Length: 191
Image 1 (tube, rainbow, N blue to C red):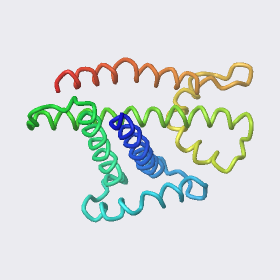
Image 2 (image 1 turned 60 degrees about the vertical axis):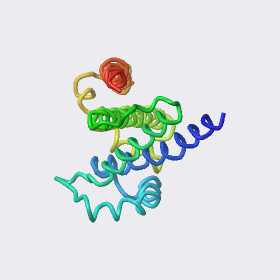
Image 3 (image 1 turned 90 degrees about the vertical axis):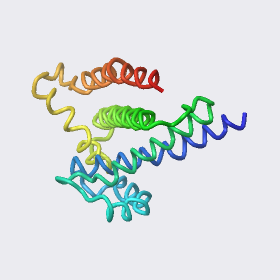
């Protein structure tokens, strides 16, 4: 019972912080406008750990590698603690075990990223109908545009309704359920 409480606390606190780190990475990657309510909040809650890490891990080609590395390390920590609290920790810890755990952590980040983009696309689609001039519309458009623009060029609107968000959501769901889930099951079997 105590383990379940620890798992909920671990998943909630660290899971939300991992999402904040990933959002910070993607906001910078997709050049989201800073003058929105989300960017200053994300930067404020992650700066205490990102700034010192940037002194050790520099960026590369405009990518904020320190933020991505922090998300990966935190995902590794959460995964290790979850396995330990569930009594599934591998014994002994070999170099191969660490490689599998790091690959599982990367898979977890891919899953988190896909969930973030699915959420962004759904909220952006709803806001485009309800309140297209919302203060967060700019940041949502910046995050969703790389995924939607390819399909918007190829799928014409049907009755003035853009179907590209639906297509992207279906594709993201397929990627989550087939290759990502398969890779995750293979990696778990190697522990």
